[in-house]
Structure formats: structure tokens, C-alpha cells
Length: 95
Image (cartoon, rainbow, N blue to C red):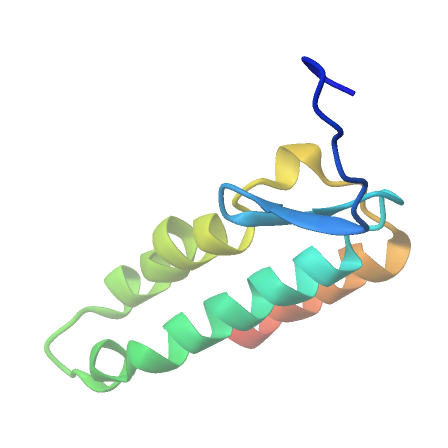
């Protein structure tokens, strides 16, 4: 009860843009973030194929845009070994 109102207990909820759950497992959120970022990567096809954009600039796109999108909210994640591996695999997929 908070201020004489009953608060419902839930298994998971969305806070800002992150999905949090009551057991501390963040693998669902890690997978979701990777999926969102992969979609963003595919939508940048024009940049990847444009011959007028220098390769050095193309290399900076994942660092400045994609990895920030994937890791948004990571300060509240508790990563397991499989989550770390999943994120590393995603990074290699980007390159």
C-alpha cells in the first residue's frame, strides 16, 4: 500500500524505454536491444552502399549510433556470461 492505495505486483514492466522484470534477469532486454539495433543497421543500407562516404566514416557509424542504441540503459543490467557473448557477437555482426 502506498498512500492508502494498493499497488499491483507485476512480473515485468516498461520503464522509460527499458523492460524491467522482478527476477533481475536482463537477457530479454539485451535481446530486445540487439533486435532494435539490428533493424536500425539494416535501415542504414544507403550509407553502407554509398561509395562517396569514406570507409573511416562508415566505421564510426556503429560506434556513435548503433552501440549507443544497443547499450541504452545498460547501467541497470546484470549481465550473465551468455548476455556478454550475445553482445560481443552482435558487435562482430555490425562490423
